[in-house]
Length: 256
Length: 286
Image (cartoon, rainbow over all chains, first blue to last red; front, side, top):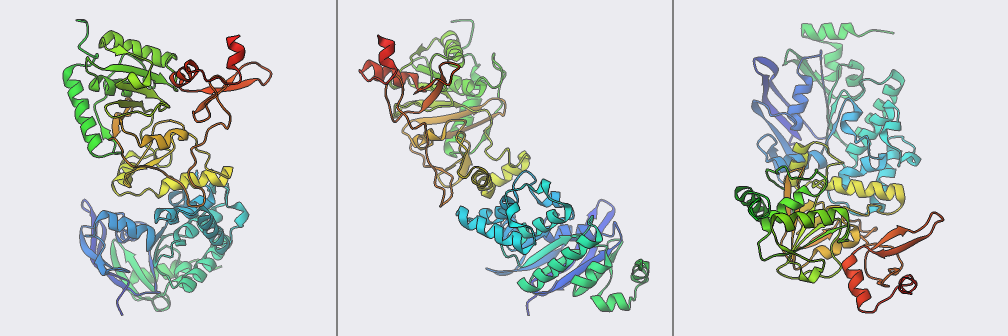
């Protein structure tokens, strides 16, 4: 089976500072990869390099495109990469304000990717927006409200709807549950798990919350100081951590 | 005429502006940056249009200046006098006689012909500006033809008002490529932009020039189920009775009295001279 995303030897330095170094992994269709680590361990740098927001110093990110098969995303031309970014890929930001247009109604936010890919029928766009608001458990009657009037959890769900409306195959998530209270987190995770399974999405989820990866991720990478120190099946890594840092991480989780 | 160089600007400046204009004509709808000069009038009064006019004027030209369609409003009068004084060119109020027409917010009702130049004053040349504040990003969006955002604006209009409520500065797509702000002309004028004359757009404060060569294809953006409509008040002109001209609403008293008159004064006057009369004009004549 061809991996959907194949990363090899990816490195990014900020001057003398290491962002991430020599990261390699394969992500297969329908698989969810979790990346955990402490603050400053290079998780977000890695994610930005994968999603094409940052240019890595070396390495390759091979994506299995629908039309042309495996292509290196880094050497791909910018229009092609941006096209991927708004059709086949989705990026969920930690802060929904980064991913939403706050001055545009919820319906407009969801419809933007449709319009960007050529949808020109208002009724269809609106119907799709209503459908997606329902799927992320936002009352469709709020379709004309601005995201600024939504709660944090609703904004995050709106951001997810906006990203998934074009039926992407690969979703990048940067701390999707960060900054939400635990009950809202639980609902969001439940929703995400449902959507990922239902749509057969592949995802790369960056988080420092081990509960999130336990629930969502099939496989796990643990990063420290820019390097991947441990990788494997989620349950295996969390239940039987081998590396000292992973052991520390797992034992640091507070029990209620 | 020794106080000023012909048409106020020095020759090197005019040359720089002409180069920008030529580039703009070669890439219709593309905003060409140029080194806008200080003009003896405030930004927002047509400094961009004046510079473009100054660069294309020749001593043989006959110039017409309109502001909201009228020849006798402050902006039109002052710019016309400016060129009378600094270029010594002949001026006119008749659309058909003019070779260079500088306009703010209207296209004349009389169809323009080959050999004429229509110069627009543009306040904000970037159609994506209020959706995407970053100039670096809007330039990239133009370069990569990422115009989905423009439809988001129209979507918001329909969601909020039930129809596309944008009535001026209605975005257009040029030859299937660049999305362009046609300056704040009413959308009634949008279909007229496919014309035989050369159209030049100058934005002084924003330092941009763009242009449309004759007979360029100009398509107003819309949705399949909400097509573009060139709307205007659905009444005849009160003075000349024209039913196909764009009308201004004029408040006539403080008791709700109002009348609609042609915004193009030259068009209205010629129609009245030809004997056309609207509902109000006859009382005036008496």
